[in-house]
Image (cartoon, rainbow, N blue to C red):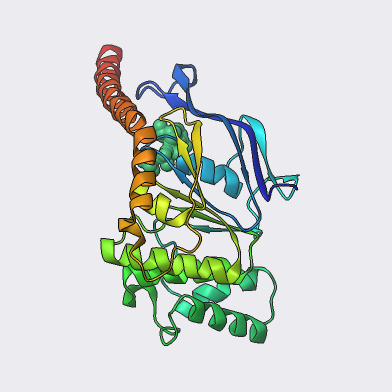
Length: 292
Ligand SMILES: Nc1ncnc2c1ncn2[C@@H]1O[C@H](COP(=O)(O)OP(=O)(O)OP(=O)(O)O)[C@@H](O)[C@H]1O
């Protein structure tokens, strides 16, 4: 069976300036992603977890079609992704809502772009506002909503135009712990109701194990897929507190074991990046002084 999404031998690098002299030849490649191979099934909830700076957002941008890989390809239903399209919905960490539009208009926005008529648009938007638990807040503006509510609007907006795949880039990272947990279980309910394929990026291990049917663990930069772990829980939304279930705790440890060396490496990379940035600033300001 063809995978819904197939990431094949994907590499991505960026050119970064070595110092503040804006000379083209003074840039060097930074390898962000290397040899990424991952197939995601139709209707699957796939979580990608990795340390800071390992290339998670870069991977999501590639899936969204916002950037292109240097080599390799990403297929959606067997066809290469060549740019952004309404077949993929995206929810970012920052709410990305239009501040001048109400909840209803924000949710209707993608439908408008898809050419859905006014009456139908309203009907569909109201259904999704209800699905995310925001009935009664249709006429509120984003500044009148809490962080969690704004993220519900963003989810409703992405789902309303019926994308094939929902891409989520740390959507709950900016929320307080209680709101985050509530939205995690709400998201599972919404996923079960809509049967969408979801690719969810996080650096939270507990979040990954709670949400994912499979969890792909990434290495530190250049990001590769270190291992993909199957999460065996059938229904995660039972009354039982799954997070304290011994099996859950065991898998959480397993993911942490895979991740901890990568986190240490990522921290070392960050440290040396800051140091070279400082020395870059020093040498470039010296350059300016010498030139003067
Ligand atoms: N446009 C860009 N130009 C240059 N370097 C970039 C660009 N985008 C990302 N990078 C670099 O690529 C690497 C991966 O970045 P990315 O944002 O994908 O990581 P991440 O895993 O999402 O990090 P975090 O968890 O901290 O958000 C980082 O070293 C980052 O500095």
